[in-house]
Amino acid sequence: MAKADNEDDLRLARDLLAGQWGEEMGEITYLKGKDALRARAALARLLLAGPLDPTLAVMLAAVFELEPESMSFQRAVVRSGGETSFASWQTVDFKRRSNKRSVPMLRDETVGLWMQQRLDDGTATSVKDATTQAMKEFHLSPAVVKSIWLRWLRSCRTQAMLKKAFPPERA
Image (cartoon, rainbow, N blue to C red):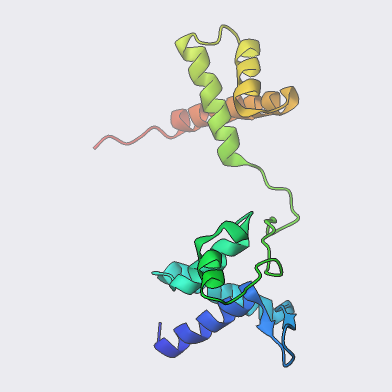
């Protein structure tokens, strides 16, 4: 990344996290719409390029910090006679990228395999027992665990049929 691009990305990321100072003292505006999306992309590029600019790292930490006044950066600014308020800084809301319902395949694979291992090693004496253990271990409802188990069994059967239909070639 060229130095000018890096500086532009750094400026955009700072504006995203701390806002932009207006003409009048104390007036802060935050990026919205396409400007915010460009700034988010700039922040992502900086995070991936590493190492992160120390000031940007502090600003990013302030967005996530529950009690920003406890941060050492904040204390250092106040000690030096300056004053800064993190109260008006951006916050982070985690949302899915899509409204489409996704099938949590990794979760299902993990729970199905976990239940199968309990049945194989005798830790669970029955599918019902394995279901109860999985509900406690993964904090899932009985209906979800049952659905996962049925998909797991279907997947195992499908894999067995595919192996039978297409046996591995021997070298």
